[in-house]
Amino acid sequence: MHRRTACCLAALAALAGAAPSLAASGQQGRWHAIAPRRLALRHAATGATFSGTWHNGVVPDAGAMRELSAVLADSRTGAVRPFDPRAIEILWELGERERIREFAVLSGYRTPGTNALVEGAADSQHLRAAALDLLIPSARLAAFGAAALALGRGGVGVYPARGFVHIDSGPVRRWGEVSARRAPAEDRLSRIAEAWAATQR
Image 1 (cartoon, one colour):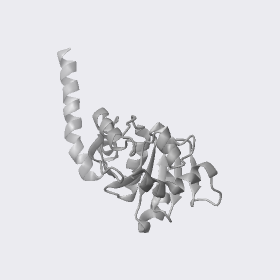
Image 2 (image 1 turned 90 degrees about the horizontal axis):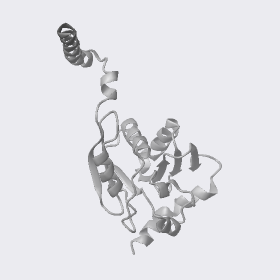
Image 3 (image 1 turned 120 degrees about the horizontal axis):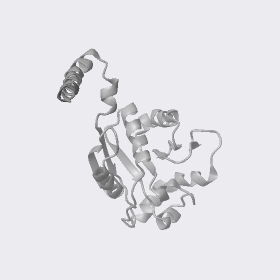
């Protein structure tokens, strides 16, 4: 029994010692997969920010998700709903691909009242705290929209004239100026920038 325990400990020590050599040789895919994931964002309407580790590489951090849910609260009422980790995962993945250090969020969770005020779709993913409207610099917007579409996860709406991209963790679909045919219900999001200003008065 003692011998078996000793063998196990030796094997673990060997694995621990191998980690640096794997990194040095460039064979670090498996180790990278469990690396902590960081994210930085600010809400354009409220000024609330989050910056830090939101995922330990295996599961989302519960405390960080509570913070993110507060930052992404309804900008008109301050109401908070637990945000969908899958939507945050999509956001993080896009940040990694496009090398964006901090996201500016135009809209996260929306209450039914706020959603109606901005003429959002009746079944909007914003109502489920599963959608984000992101302000993206015009020079990077096309590439960001293409990267979001390439993920093949959730909904993507691109609005170059208004400088924002919508992403969500709902069914895979596209609208706005990323396809010839627009989805009428979701196209109402194109007026969100103007409607947001009205909610602040």
